[in-house]
Length: 282
Image (cartoon, rainbow, N blue to C red; front, side, top):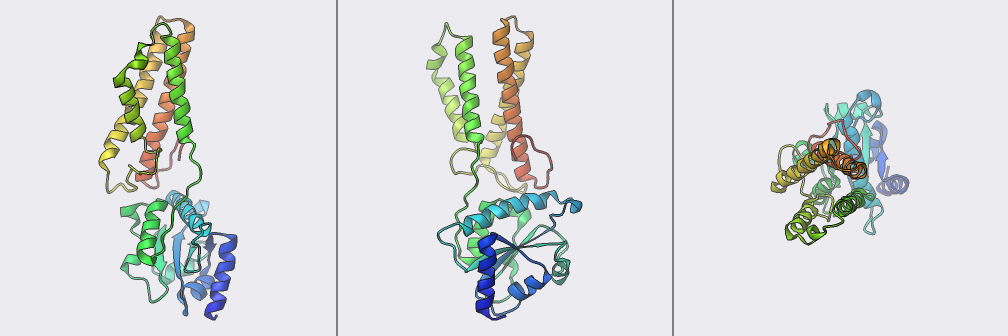
């Protein structure tokens, strides 16, 4: 195939699907064979259920976010394409590259063969879309702004906070001095700042090989939330207060345990890729 035919074919496929699925024939014609004036980021994976590759599915979700961010950005060009080779659709490609593990990300540059840096260090950097975007920028000079689907954890947290405040107002309706407690408001502000789902700053390192300083405080906060929920549940079961107030304490306790335990699992999954269990949040 001549170069213009290759580019037109890839652009046509990219217009329909951000990640182009390739078999052995497509890979050899469009990625390996010259001429080529474009880079191709290829994820080698094994997504079929019988392969039982949990981490492949998680990596695929992040890869799709990255590819969609590029495909629907105003800077989209034919300089770079995102593709995928599944083992069950292109086992000959795995054999050609002497590849025996998945998922693996490789950049096939516009000129020459892939170098050592063109293979993504998955175990070190994790597979978050933001980390992949930095690697892509380093290898291709194409900068992609990652745009994620809406995350409803923030509104959920706000709703829980309002419910807790409402419960406290109800329980202590005759004494609202606690609303003027500077320490309490300072603690609430600290919780908001450390919450990894607020703002654009990522406080959780995407790999089990490294850890940010803030992670210790975040995990401590989440464990504190679970503990507070258990205390409220205990008080609701053993307190002599009226039934209405005990119900409120019980609901608040369950909400705290469920929410913060779900966040703890989410943090664990983000660091130990392949961990199969989650609760409410992935």
